Amino acid sequence: MAEVLEFRNPRVDRGRMAYLGGLSAEVSVQRHYHGQGAELAASRWRGARAEIDLIFREGDRLVFVEVKSARSFEQAAQRVQWAQLHRIMRAAEAYAGQHGAPFCEMRIDVALVDGAGAVQILGNVSMAA
Image (cartoon, rainbow, N blue to C red; front, side):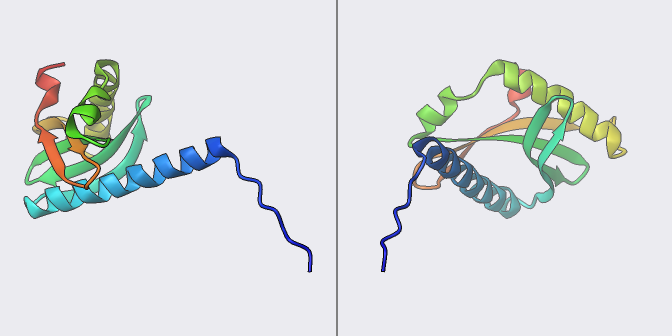
């Protein structure tokens, strides 16, 4: 019987691992917010030239969450880009308008996930942007 050689593309493998790592980080963040009583409204929502990783409802408030993961919280925090946060702000306004909540209270958080899956929230980063 002939042996089948499998050729792997390292770039594709890195992309696949990054994608799966991102999904895992998002699940950890969903658990964190759910434990705080928030309800998931959407995930990976695309609009206004930006993708919002997670959107939660906390009563009448909408919380838009950008998830960043790395080996440490510090490394994850370094991946936050202000230009990206500004795009998320515009997308958040579009989401609220499309879902009948244009004048509701809104907040943008950055959720940092370390290599162990622990979650740290940087709350209301839109005020710093």
